[in-house]
Amino acid sequence: MSYSFSKGDPVISARKSKTNKNSSLTQNQIVRKYGLTKNQIQRYLPRPQVKRVRGRGGSYWTVGVWPAEQVEKALQGTELSQILEEREAARREQRQIAEVRTLFEEYSPDSYIERARRLKRSFVLHIGPTNSGKTHDAIEDLKRNLPGTYLGPLRLLALEMFDRINAAGIPCSMLTGEESIPVDHAQIVSSTIELCDYRTHFKTAVIDEAQLIADPGRGASWLKAICLVDAEVVHICMAPEAQHYIEELITRFSDQYSVVYHQRLAPLRYGGICRGYRDLRPDDALICFSRKSVLSTAALLEKNGFRASVIYGALPPEARRNEVRKYSSGETNIVVATDAIGLGISLPIKRVIFAETEKYDGREFRSVTTAEVNQIGGRAGRYGLNEFGEVLALGNKNVIQEKLGKRVPNVRAACIAFPREVLETEYPLDLLLRVWQQMERHKEFLREDMQDARILLKCLKGFHPSENQRELIFDLITCPVDTRTEELVNYWAECAKAILRKKRVPLPWFGTESLLDCELQYKAYDIHHQLLRRIGVLDDCTAERSAICDRIAELMKENKSQYIRRCRTCGKELPIGAMFNYCEDCYTRGDRVPFYR
Image (cartoon, rainbow, N blue to C red; front, side):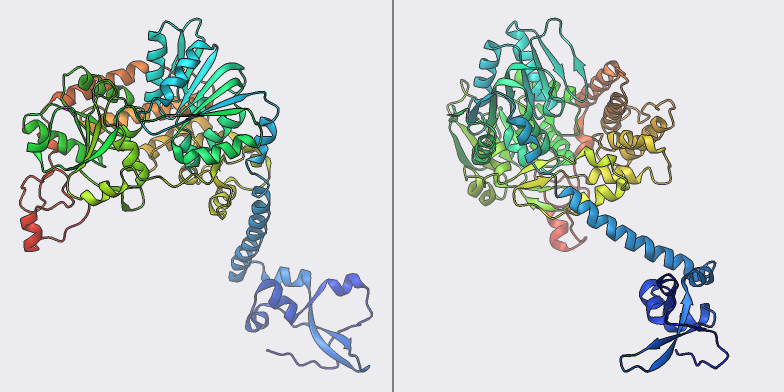
């Protein structure tokens, strides 16, 4: 597009002041600033004024210019205005993203290390595989040197240490995200690692399962505890793959450490293939990787004369503890479990049998890793009860045989927490979380996975809290919630909105008619408790949760045949470890297209 100018057109002198010069825009400047095409300029803008420009050779020519204010006014109210606003918002967001990335690059483990150098501590590193007595030796020193604290990855481990220490006649309290059990004159606190007390000085601290320092979801808690727990002696129990990294970490702020190596007290070996029911024995543990598989397998075993205890992640901790008790006391004689058995559960198991070798990790089906095979398989063989432990496979023997006993790759990076300090900046919370999640992996550390927090924040979209609620919102969205379960996410959203509106938080409504209802109800009470604790309200749901666990125990005693998996086409019972939802005959005939569970 071009304009032709006549003698009557107003002319702006090239010698006008800089202010006037800068307040007018040429056609090319408008294209660059607003992204308009030349046709859009002709359509939406009035006829331009004329500006005389002097060239290098002394000659003059004229160009069309528009006062900047005139351009803004002309575009207001047109269909282009929203597009232009969106473009400007996108440019503004890109600038903010660059600024936030620069801000996040300033955060690293160094902030912890500087504070760690001011503490006077010595460290004892306990290195060894599962069932090698690492934690036992550390706890014995803890009981001799009080006051102290135990920091573990799971409530079940904290509860086990709570029971063990109190049984030894030493008062011990327990503190987890789900509950608090105070004990008068307690000299030890057994807690999950997220609730480590950094304000109290201890004589002894025990940090368990420290190889989880590299876990993107929770590893930041181990990094913080190792760097900042205030104790004269810190025992760190870990798998061998974490030794090199944690030694390097400690030498950055202290040279006072020693290493104690532990060997398995009952050797572990590969026991071959399990061919089915006729090969099963009492004191076996069958490993599946889904709740449905666990319940179906337990039902099939009970149909064939076994008495089964079931253990899986969605089962409430008290119910899991009850299942462990039944097995340990002889009420049941076989265990069916998911990989939840790998941490925090001590059972008199001689053989671990992998009924499945593939698991869904939240994104895809994959083969079990070397670390998982060794961690889960390592539960076989209880010192004092068995001379050795055996690991077997049902079906794909190669996966288990190849990975059992193989060295796990070394931990190469720790996980750092999302820095709360950035909440004081002017940037939107959703932008902070998005940029943090999209940052490239650093060679020396991982960033805490905030995907669940982003999912929960989206549930508050359209809800407009006041500015002074920003930190509260962050506390609410970092509440542990299974974001893969829609019912729990919806319940969290109802509770969070009630808190932000300063209204009564609703109680869970899922009921206890079925096992799934009980699991949802228990998890919802956990959400209720955790959210209220974040606003300083102590709401004791112990009685309600105990009632749910009692109901689960009743349901577990009932006939489990309803959980048996059957062929989708002919209804035939599927065998233990079946990969598909169809029997072999239907699969061979091609009656249905098979698919993974």
